[in-house]
Image (cartoon, rainbow, N blue to C red; front, side, top):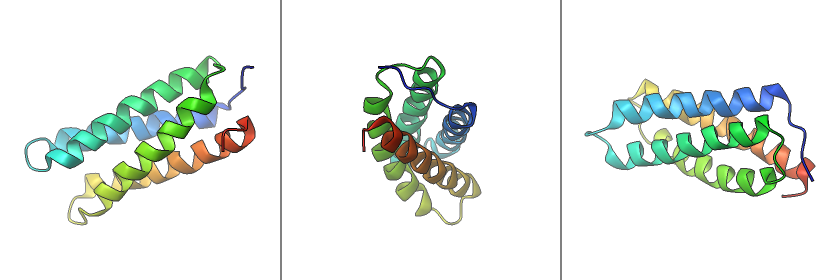
Length: 110
């Protein structure tokens, strides 16, 4: 069964992926764990945006993974209060995780 997803949900996923990519680039070398989590999160958010764009039947499985990864990335980035890029990334991750929770509830994956 396919799940119809709104454009705003796709936009939130893409925004999170973008912020994570930027944060990972800034953290390379100085904060490797943060960079790794951001890369993981970006990859999953790009993937979720693609699945949502084509209304894949696998959206419930994807968003469950995305919630966990976004939360982990946000938690790591929030530790770096002196890094504006980390704070922007954490905010985007929290927003994406919340959107993924809504999708999971509607799709019956919660």
